[in-house]
Length: 272
Image (cartoon, rainbow, N blue to C red; front, side, top):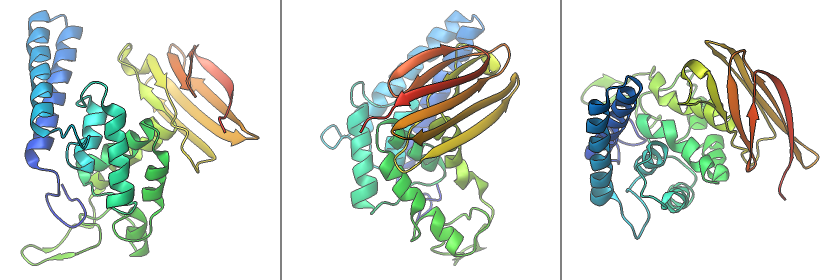
């Protein structure tokens, strides 16, 4: 919705609605399992599996490795709707769509933009994500800034007056959903399903090309979670703070460490 140039956009509603239906079923299954409602768990787990299979059979192009749009591919990668073993191929196709078909620009609207940058970086296409982020021509965030925007607009600047409905919204904050990528992607702060309220944390920063340092802090119910990394002299330095009563699974450049509450300093050699 509200993609560049059109509303609702270039992703058919059956794709996004089926994807959300799948996510709802997955969440209900998880909730039922936590509550000990095994009958409901089996019901919703079976439903989710069926939706996923139907989604892939109906929408996935196995030759082109795509569900047909940037938004559809990003959702599939983020929500687990990609066929097993096809994730990297879909991400590669998505990066080509961004860089070649759209000249380094996004074609996503509100829903797809939330996951587009994260999906690209998760599968090694950080350069494509940063290219989009730094664009100044239409359609891009930078182009909105150049037009004097201080908020996210409903449209991407291509038309501010609708012939049917008049002036469009200049306050569509839902267009900014991609900014969660700064926290769960670049900084890598993610909640783990193994513990509620960030009792258990997954730290998995995406070391993106062209980004020399990043620092983020999230105030959880248990206290501040900090992830701060920088490149220096061919090495990567990472400072992590875990709040009291919490623990974390820290992923960095292919290595995993268990961290307890407190401050931690990690160092790795950068490839290349």
